[in-house]
Length: 391
Image (tube, rainbow, N blue to C red; front, side, top):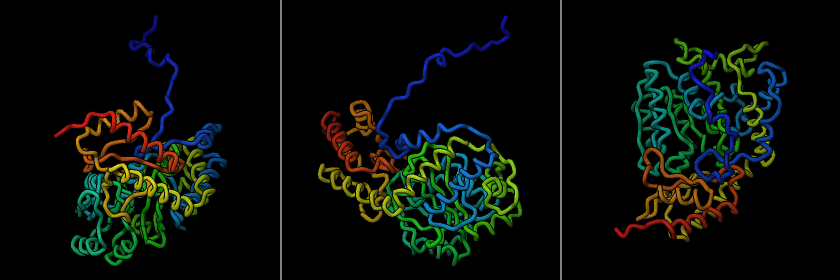
């Protein structure tokens, strides 16, 4: 007689079935067959030399994508939030001051993470769809004197592409590190880590790279490493400790790599393939394609009578477009109708933009004019069939 009190779940006796879907929300994006196939390669040991070679390829691909020569460049095992915590947990010690430039949900999250490890957190807050001038940033740096400034390059909750030129120089004038979140923008909008004097930069795999979620490229400048490797206290997370991660990824020039954690081997395969696709197209070509498709999309929306949430053209994120929620309609009904009738995902707002916008993502292989036409047709259909209030 069995001693088990919990029987095998009936649900697991059914075969797994996942539908094909057009993923035109703010992420994850659709994954091309080539990248999916890369993930089916054999699983071998995470400390085998063949895997170290894959990891080295990934490092080179990230250096190209970030436009950096930083030695401490690798991919965190986890999503973008993991990279955000890796950056903050390593760069900041309890009692130190952090300044978060909040122009959407990601600045709010960064402030929350810093507070949790005992940092003294100050924020500057931009209005919805807004961003900060260099004068506003310098004023805050002068007032608060933080050790770290957090800025979101591509704010996916509001659709803002934040200008980065000059911020790094200002930070270093005030002996402050610059941390940039480019999860939603990386590969789809120009960024030059070294030229723009960014100290810590990270992104995610599931946006422009069209890789399944689960790995997060990150890089640390020499200035950042000098501070991190002279800490008085250990980082609060062993898993995200940069000393261990730098060795595991072969970034610290030591003769041997030590076991730190079991890396997600198949995720490394897909990340390497996504970086290879980007390298084959060319970074500048990718930037131009995303800009051109976004402009085509924005023109189409305006021809329909819809309004863009971000008024300044130069501040519009080319990868994630925010559309002012059409007056008189329930945004939830619009997104649900489009999913049901067109098998197409777009989403509503997030954080400060909830109830204000519809968000459409056109990232990586999804950034095409044919897909724009499909989305515009779906929106027209939804506005025709969804209930419109007369109020």
